[in-house]
Amino acid sequence: MMKTLFLNPPACEGFDGGAGSRYQAKREIRSFWYPTWLAQPAALVKDSKLIDAPARGLSLDAIIPMIADYELAILHTSTPSFANDVKVAETLKDANPKLIIGLVGAHVAVSPEPSVLASNAIDFVARNEFDFTIVEIAQGRPFSEVDGISYQLDGRVRHNRERALITDMNTLPSVIDVYKRDLRIEDYFIGYLEHPYVSFYTGRGCKSRCSFCLWPQTIGGHKYRGRSPQIIAEDVANIQRSFPQVKEIFFDDDTFTDDIPRVEATARLLGKLGVTWSCNAKANVPYTTLKVMKENGLRLLLVGYETGNQQILFNIKKGMRIEFARRFTADCHKLGIKIHGTFIVGLPGETSETIKESIRFAQEINPHTIQVSLAAAYPGTYLYRQAQENGWFRDSKQDLIANNGMQISSLEYPHLAHEEIFNSLSTFYKRFYFRPRKIGEITWEMLHSWEMTKRRLREGVEFFQFLNQRQDGA
Image (cartoon, rainbow, N blue to C red; front, top):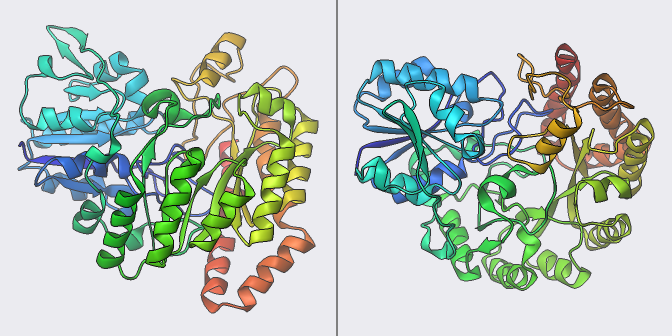
């Protein structure tokens, strides 16, 4: 094997650079996801090294001295960070001209040719599901023999045939030993999860067809492929042995609840281990399954509600009805399952009134915490094609973040200006959190836990800073 470095590149201060996240910008509260998409091939390549620069707070100057002995560097990139990551690649190549540099991630999967041509420092890009692609590169195979890559040859870009999706996820090794070897778990913090936490994927793909969602449309696909409950339990037991300080485990699958029998079987095994865990879920899980999950250690569900307007749910192909979401949420409240609800403003069909409708809906169902994002049309998604065809992009650059790292509203409509979409995010947060019921809930929570008091006070400071700083990106 080549001596291989897997690098989540340095970026702007506060950049949520976790390679597993689909939303790469500054958040309202400092957050870092585990770089699972890099950790997985790192687990396959013997004696490799994983560096997560944003989470560790490492600058490019700090990384350059480390790369002299490496033969291969794999950088995870995204649409918002691509220009920055190309500069990182160029700096690494200048420092080590013999270094082979490959880029991975959804951005290069859907735009392989311009990505390869962006710089001579980029030797190849790996498209789609790239785990075994990187293994073959590290083994020294000629580029011409490696499925799933694009590279320059004689001044032209060559696109090798697609690599087949992995059908048996059990063939992939655990990422937990890579975490133990290369990461400091205390670096990873999510406002709605207990700290410290560990997250990883138990499967890939998502049955839903949400028009805006990046990973299923670019890398994971719409067929959910999961590891067996027994192997998931072995990974969790490994976490218990390796990181006894961990308070919560988060399963980062796009929709962990896509396979109900597997969820229930996994939950029962987790219950025997006595762990606290959380996961992504769609708002259609039946009460009986929620009960099994809760009785076996489930604490929180991350649920993408997106909007409180049924027509917008139809527009984005969510496959969800508002009445189902209401019933699901009521079931969670009854069982004592906390919910972190995510919402998006500015989706197709949005109006001033539908934004108000979503705010009222969020207040009514009252998840424990929320996250509000601006609609973002990433290349490779159906929403991106819609925006191009209908002229919804506010300008030709189609930027997703401002220079300060804050998300901006890249979409606008004839009846709804981007300024109103942008400003509605702050309004949404304020109307959800600054009401007696929610203030009372947070105060009660703080009164019963000194740790929670310290945490909520710090998050409150970060939240107000976020609301003030984002005005610079308007």
